[in-house]
Image (cartoon, rainbow over all chains, first blue to last red; front, side, top):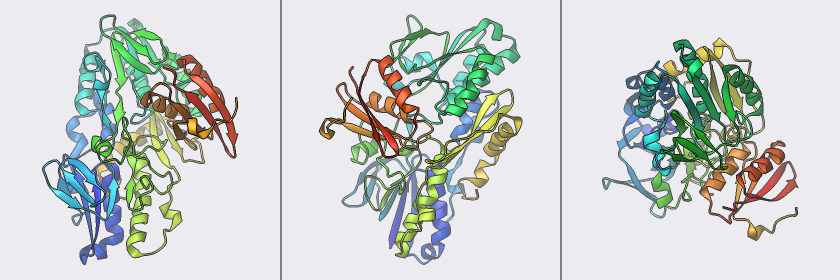
Length: 385
Length: 82
């Protein structure tokens, strides 16, 4: 029997399990293959929705569903927290003592936020990387009546590179609608020398920032917070005063990956081959999504396009044939929407060889994102798009 | 600036084909995760990296060790000084 074990029930883990089941259904039915997902909560969370909790239009209850309902009925689901991976024994140990053996291991363990890595983050800064934090930011915005808003990034890498810029645009639009824009200063801190990493997007975003009166601070990587003086300090030695501080928190990979020797400290990102998605040269261990160290957006979209690659490689190995490289090599494809505010958006689509050429922002791409958010449960995790 | 002996290099970041987050963001991540004295090389297929990485390195007070041109990509070597 061939045992496929997938750690993590997010976009990458769920989609990989369902795609594997589509391709291996006969072997699963006959008992030759098992496919099992381990997830620590048993709830699948649609994280891109968190930003919309902060922006007022979404409710947390709509952003999670039971993982069981998204998986093919023949995929096993174990709800539990992983303690360690024993590579020699090919065994995963859970915190509750359960042990699960594997022949193929897929690491879809995502990323976790670590706000406490920066002193005073939890008491001084707001963010939108959990449902609860996004709701707190919503309350802070509701109570806000003017002053200095600073939006910045306190760690690399982080989920969804466009998100902080989108939030700055959306907040500015909201403040204008509420009639308090005139008594509000807005500052956006970019980690690099322009507004956004992709030059064409930056060229599009910079005049929007100027038009909205949001001051751009380049090369400003948030490093520390001084709560007494209410200033945020950068890695590059500058500081900015704030009344309302909105920061992307630092992110890390799953802790057990470091403890098991699969990923290096301190980040815990898995060393992953950019084409095969194999981890550290191991033939039967794969990673996808946020968990990898690939130089790509940490976003569900990345996992979405990586899952078919891992599926093909595992199916080929089980069928005892060569990998079909048209399906089994990852070319770096990522696709995501970008909100500009005022009901407009654009689309970023690129791969390792082709830079994004985003269309001029319009209402269509904004609506595209809204429709995608609403239909996600029926499409992406089930492998229908 | 000259080729750096490989034994001095502590870490290589392969950011070829990275548009988002991009080679400079990958270098900043590497710098944040490393101890002072670490020498990092970032590989980039983005011609803009030859300009924007040295600018950031200067502003952040680190040291640009070398810019090496290879077949199809640049290697920018930086020492984390503090």
